[in-house]
Image 1 (cartoon, rainbow, N blue to C red):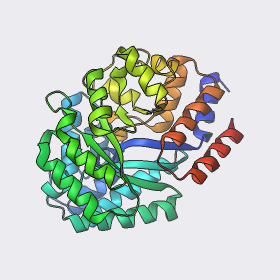
Image 2 (image 1 turned 45 degrees about the vertical axis):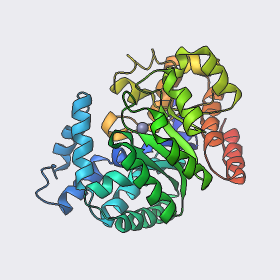
Image 3 (image 1 turned 180 degrees about the vertical axis):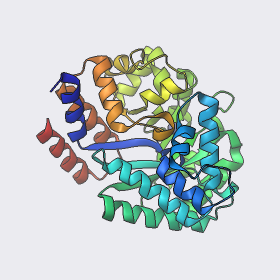
Image 4 (image 1 turned 60 degrees about the vertical axis):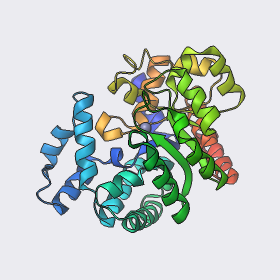
Length: 338
Ligand SMILES: [Zn+2]
């Protein structure tokens, strides 16, 4: 077997954990075909071949077109259920055992989905993910930052009032430039006091100052992306010392043009400074990414050994919000593969 296909087989065998994937962005063409058939007249293609063409990444604007087209289709609990189960099937096919999935309740409610329908779809989908696909799912409810403090307040109220099974964390997404992290401090403080973990996006599309703000103002325990931390040695040292993991999404960063290529990605620098790096997919079908693919590409670009790949997969287990016993079991399973 050539070395790259031997490595691909090794990656496929590794039990994995995914920590940064958006529910809407995880929709595969097959899932979207199902939703589009359920909602005729939406303008989204129902034919799978046409949908695959629609999904092919062209540029960032086209990605946004696809993302918002999918978002607008989601108006019933059955739609949410199908999204969750579709994601679980895709994760299971890659030996992903556990995922923390970002859900943006505020956007769904704006698109006409009731809060109750969202909760019902998440609960039934999560159940089916575990029983039909052997994948355990947890939720991160996140604030769409571009919609300001109203979205912050509403997301917090929705999260704390309902506290669905599997809700582990509170996040912040959307643009970073012009949307200071500190604006959302009161909502993160309340969420943390209620026992939710703080996992904001920061340092994806802006510099290290945003990561510092996520840490100081939002009490970030883990950072969504955080790639620009590589430009600040003091921040790298802080992340390593305080064991604040980064949810690195290499293909996403290339697609959104934050980095030129995976080879040029600062992931090596992050690792060399002892930062707890995890590999993730962000919006996988829309970026043409898979979790296995992220591991393989990074392994090839950085020349990682199998032992180093096992360590990377272990980072995601350690950085997760799983119970300690479950973490130990997964780490033991990883050690047996390595
Ligand atoms: Zn993201």
